[in-house]
Each structure stands twice: as C-alpha cells, then as structure tokens.
Image (cartoon, rainbow, N blue to C red; front, side):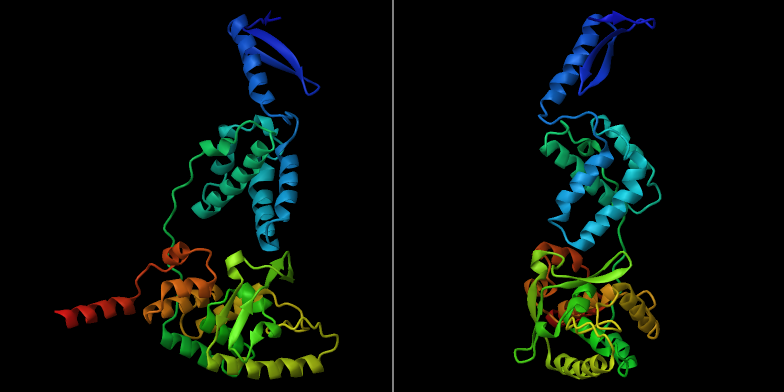
Length: 357
C-alpha cells in the first residue's frame, strides 16, 4: 500500500532478491506504476539480479572471452578494463548502470586519443551486451552513447626502395640483417617474424608458412600457437636472395646453439640469447636505432610491413594478392590501409598523362 511521505511524495516498497526496494511518485498511482514498471522490465530477464556488480560481471565475461581470443587480445582487454573501467564504475551494480554512468567513464578519459576511447567503448559495450544476452540486464545503455569523432591519423612512415637498401646495407654485418631483410621482403608482422620456426620455411618451394606468433605477456615473451586472425594463417612466397640470407643465418644460429649452455630448442629462426622467444619490444628498439642511421628516427618495426605493401603497390602488384600476402581479413581492409597515393605514384600518373596527350 502506498504511504505518503513528509515531502509530499508517495512511497511503495517491495522485496526483490532479498532486498527492500522503494519506489516514489507524486501520487499513489504514480508510485505504484513506478514499482510495476521496474518489476515488469526486470522480470523480462530470467536471470535478473540487481545485486551483481560490474566488477563481478567483468570477471565472468573475461572467463568467457579468454576461450575465444588470443593471449595478446586478452591482455589488451584486461589492460583497458583495469585502467579505465574497474576504478571508475567497477563497484556500481550492473542493474544501476545508466547512460550517465557510462558518460562519466568517457568524460574522465578526456585528453586521450579518440582511438583509445572508442576501443574502451567497444569493450564496455561487449561486456554489457553479453549481460543482455544472458538475461542479466534488460538493456545495453552503451548503445545510447555517441562515439568520439575520429581524429585523422597521419600515415605510417615508410621507406623508399633506396632507403630500404641503405637500411639493410648499414646492418649487413650484424646478426639482425636476416630479420629485417625478411621483414621488408615479406611484410610479416613483428609477432609473426619472432614466432617463425625453421620448420615453417620450405627451402625447396621458397615459401614460408605462418601459423604461430611471439607475444609479450606482462614482461615475458611467449609463443602462441595462434595468429592475429584466421586469415593471418597463410603461406607466402619469398625471393631467392632472401632465402639465401636465411640459409646463412641458420648457420649462425646453429653455431650459437651448439656453444650455448641450456639452450631452449624452440626451433625459432630469430631466437633470444638462450633460444627462447625474443621480446617484441627489443626488436622495435633495434629497428628505431637502425632507422635513425638513415635519418628516419620515427620509422617503426610495423613500418617494414607498410613499406613492403607500398612498394608492391608502386610496382603495380594486384591488391587482392597483396591482401592475401599480408594476411588481411578482408580486401576492404587492404584498400582502406593503402588507398593513399605516394609521391612516386603521383609522378607515374603525370608521366602517363604526358604520353596520352
């Protein structure tokens, strides 16, 4: 029965999940309607529990996700969740999360890149959507939140063919020459290069099979028997010169293996000091060091992949073939990434026009 309060409002109450919940209205009818609306809305969720916190649900969600994603993606998710979600609204009850609750999270991220904010929104949206699918809550309010405007990211720094030659020439007598030669020649990802085994290279057919990666989990480098995506598992052809460089590199690694005590025989092409997987960050630092020698201090390890693709495009390679070589999930991804026009391509266009007219 509705009870009138000192402030003039009417109040009704009901025990839900062992806890007394109160509802208010300016009239008896309004208070009762507020209670009925709440009950009808939430009882549509068979497993509705208004006591479960977001933190508790996040733990359940992560357990579900861990079975379907790579260790690197899992680490990325937990990093975002711990940094931007748990501390802000982790203690809030799942049933009490509303658009304003979510906006508070993203307002607190002011100053961060639109990409980081958008990624956090995607993760939080997935967390809440799973709760809806499991009949824990009736609605995913992330759908009410506007995405930040995407800031145009500058193009990745790439090297010209001559700059690639200079880069490799400067390190021709170092242990890293084969690694960067293969990176520029194939466009393989950093994780794919460091996860490559000798058994993945077919020296007779001049091909490389990509099926595992090396990742950094915490502060440790580990081997994962998965790739970034299903399409990342692929076989790519390599040129004779690069193949010969790998043969010479194998002799060096074999000698090191024999001399090193307690060698961890992972059969890796580019192993760490003791034979185990090499830390990806270490290779990135080495790349920047060598790039600085040719006046390109902002060039990154991922830039070797973009350089490979860009040089192929400049030389008229088929975009579909490039997609398969890079292991992109879709043709559109390749087009979106490499739709820019390089100075060399602009010069080629001018030259073709001059021949026409």
